[in-house]
Image (tube, rainbow, N blue to C red):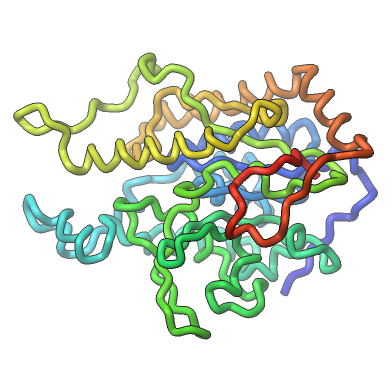
Length: 361
């Protein structure tokens, strides 16, 4: 295990926890926003995310700089992740058969290999390699945590700390790339991760964490926060006004009806965009970097290089605006100096809504 300490007390005024919202290919904008925080000298201590947010959080925790991440994104061919099984190639009915047989169109193996290679290049294999402080409580032990949805047990998973619920006794032993693969498994598009519980023999079907909490800004909340939490949220200001060269219109049959694939894509986009709006209170927005996603869809896997660059720049613009606002500075002072912070969040979260009355730690 590689133990990586943060050196608490050396530069605490720039310490921050970061929570990245999920959003499929729109996650490029998260890297843009992080690049500004990095340039301003902010030092992430605890990070978390769902789906694309999990990818970004884990890679930053592994030691990738924003410049490295931008290069990785620039060279990425999203079509590479469309790894189809043999039945997908059957004319007309192929994808429907794949969904019925494997519960997803794409296998997700290509993504898993890609993520594993990136992490191993930085010496990261298990969450034991991402330990922030050995003496920290489990909630703050790891540099990065990811959100996943256990369909079998119908519950939210915060990994690796919920690893025992999957039969892994020591959370340090959970493979990081596999956890991210669980978190990014967009239903229907990617096959769920089928994980066999070694203790119970039960098979868990695990899918995208965004199905239950796409923006887990509550995750690091505490009664006496040592430093602030910033949430990087992907928002659509006006879906009727996409940027030039915007996404293609939904696939339709000759009758004008949405195709099955287009319908499923729209359904997933809607669920992931709408869910956490129910749980984000007005007081959360003073710690939220709201990034305009410029009309890009969650599942727009054929994203052009031009649109990817615009997303990255949109993230930078949002972060610069956030850091220039007075309410952000007032929020940091209020959250980290208030002697009395009402409420608390329990460690057991199975029966707790994905929100909290406490705002940061």
